[in-house]
Length: 109
Length: 120
Image (tube, rainbow over all chains, first blue to last red; front, top):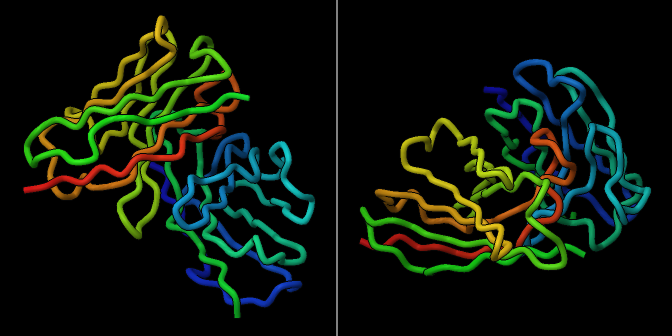
């Protein structure tokens, strides 16, 4: 099983600031099968990034993903009010066991 | 576009079986993988398992033995059964499609989720 660790647990920032979220895997993720999701209260998660760095359809370009192997990053270049939410990373390459990280909450400072 | 909707009882008694259905609209279950994911109140996401439209399944080993998934192509639905439930199974249950036509695809789209509470 690939265990994902996300840091920080909570990120307190102001609108307009840059957010950098980290996701670390316990073993290398093959072919960068790493995704990022955004979840707002009472809502289902929404796919933001797949393949570590590809934006999903309709996702603004202020969201970007990078990394490979065991270390991955989600960057939000300039936070908009609607970006304050919880972000989860997910590995989907270990198809016998798909796992999620514990999440990073981005809240308003 | 494809939309998913979970349905089923919101309250299940401890030791009984949780049964949920996901109805797919705006698209077909054919040629895709479909997953169930759950989220206990205030906690993170846990993948339960997936089913291919042919009926082939893969379950999370942590739940294996209690989980059964099935697909009904004629109704464009797939289903989840979880047996011997306890309070630890209280969660919002989501269904989702694997975005590409492989099991190794991220989840997109998701259903809105349905809260299932296990009562004693």
